[in-house]
Amino acid sequence: MQTHLQPANPNEQSDALLVFLPGAYLKPDEFEREGFISAVRERHLAADALLVDADVSYYYEQTLSERLHTDVIEPQRAKGYKSIWLVGISIGGFGALIHELARPGSVDGIVALAPYLGRRVLGAEIKKAGGLRMWQAPTGPQPDEEPDRKLWPFFQQYLKDQTSKNLPPLYLGFGLEDRFVSNHKLLADALPPGQVFTTEGGHDWPQWRQLWRNVLDVLPLPSLGRARQAARQPQQQPTASPWAIAA
Image (cartoon, rainbow, N blue to C red; front, side):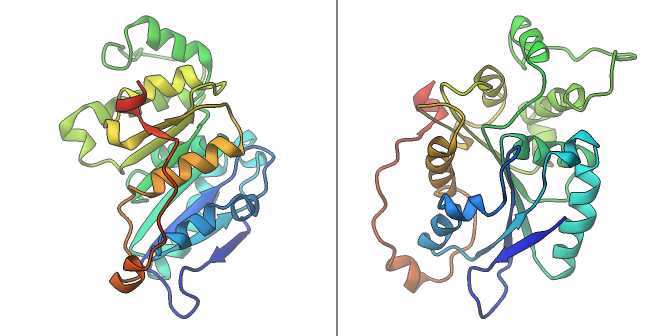
């Protein structure tokens, strides 16, 4: 996988690293063009950004998790990063989540913006059962081995106090008219309200930009320093809302 590093401070490496996974048929440099990197810098956060060229071929070939771990996560850990977060849009969000399934605990947090969460038929089954709190995952042989069959039982672990403590914090953002919104709402109900953000609109950059800026305001990332923090310019009032307000 090809990567491009955008350091928070050109003179030294930060302790935290944000690894960006693009959506289907999007290029990693679009994160920079759409203001994702500048949003980090505006907040004077001590977090480097790594743009990853993870195109859809990795998903079709089901090699995303292995390549991401071998080509990105392990080498960055070896460089000394103490905290690594995956930030994925659409299928990139799906990639971040299935990587956690394949390599539990290898990252310190996940931000999934408008993530693809698998087939709608599975979501419809969960909704019919009354949501993730009521749904019981099928046991025994499954009709296929698609990763979304493991994804929903994994999400249920966030509902349990004991198991959720061992999971990386998951922040979810989505547009209320997004084409995947029915599945987004199912996942939202399994997460703390302060880790779920919504905004008006669908599945496109204007929504993702707004969601990222609001999620970024609450991520537990280190600051470059108190002096710079005090000099931060006032931020525009957010139009993305915490799930507790928007629900």
